[in-house]
Length: 435
Image (tube, rainbow, N blue to C red; front, side, top):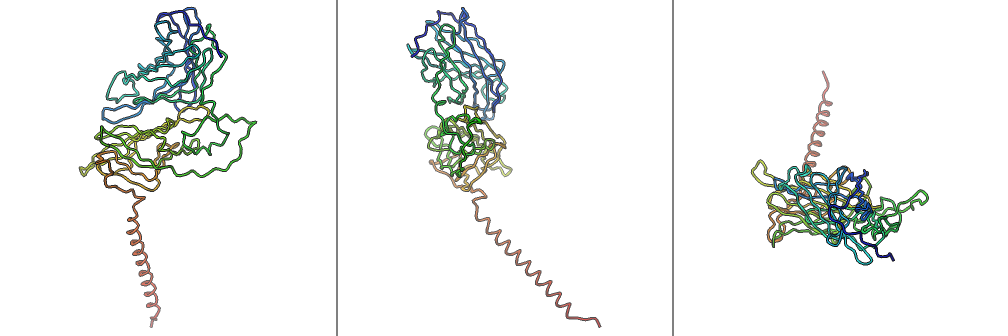
């Protein structure tokens, strides 16, 4: 058991100095590792941290639609306000980055352990990333940290990617190395590994990772001396059909029924969304609606629906945008993010529902597709918690086969008549001779 650490001598807010270094790292978000060393007046380290983070933020636009923006600390990170703590103020780790964005966490301890306490994140919609935001200015969210208590005088390490979701913001953290309440200014050589990194599965090929992301755990790195076992890939089962809904007050404003399967072709991996472990959030409006599905905080799918006016002066709704974030559990790698804001599918009259029982494929990007099964959706004008009359997709419309069959039969009959006529003419000519 670790011995109790000595608290650094009381310091006032301006009395701490900090060294911060941003290191580049490849990945889907091209995030940067942030390294922080908070020191007291005697130049002794009191907090050491190195981690990677990114933020996914949903915001409302001037046209009352919703979009996603991604923020990440880059090379212009500052550290104003970080302190070692004293009898009045808790130790605080704070950074600032970009155009007015900031993030901070404070720490508490007992006689034997320490842990993160409150996380505060402020994002500024005056940033170019929110160029069409309806509300301009800084917005702050506060949330409790999910970190479990760590033994004093040990370094907390967690390569596994973790997330915290609050309001319209998703915070992602990975490759975390942290020690608060550092003793005698020296970072400990003893590690405390997070539970997610301790959980492993047997080495397997990527092609076999066909279960829901929520069921995946951190897989060990396979070296050349440990060859992958030869296994037979099992066919991917059809996803379970989920029933999802949103309410505006006490009234249902959106209904959705579907089975969802993600095809991440870059891996490759197929992911079935499990409705039993999926949380439903979103928003309803007169001309725009968002359905967000979060499968065990490992897969986030945002469906954005919009209303359009046609030349016939009628209104129709359609799926306009899809944004997906997949937290990949392999070796604590970065989240995979893909989106398409130029869709025009699932189109039908406003006040109706759209239905397609056969499998459909939604092309989000070249690297990610969504397969839907037994789809039915109504994002506007839901009455009495029930679907309105459905517009069936062309794949389901068997009535189209009737005119095709009739047309083919008529064409065949015409061909037969023409052939018979030509043969008859030839026989007629053959019966006459020139005198």
